[in-house]
Image (cartoon, rainbow, N blue to C red; front, side):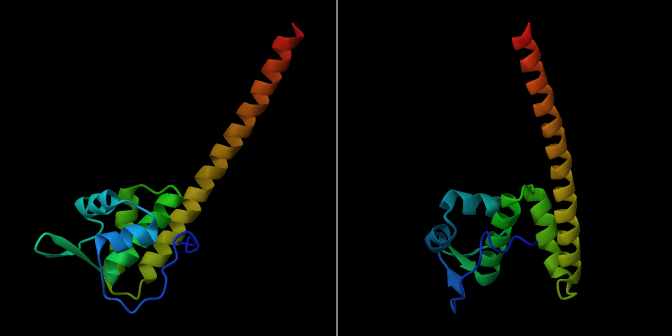
Length: 132
């Protein structure tokens, strides 16, 4: 998705992350991370009761937040994230993400046009009411 600017990943040599590290990095609550886990979007390892997040989990959180920031549902985000595992060098994932971004943009353009029409009608109506 061309949304990389919204949640860039800082370079790090770390392979493991705590829930508080990811919460702080992305500005989200620990509850949000647990919710993404419940939804099957991330899969942290467990060391006793402690969640240990991998680089993969960290990257997936960034993609989740990017997707949410442009209006994708968690189901849509999950479908696109799962395409990473096809083993084709992310070609399918990139193609599908680009296609879905374009579709979303087109839907938003249509909504904007509808809103502009409605604003015009409301303005006209207000003027006609004031003129009476």
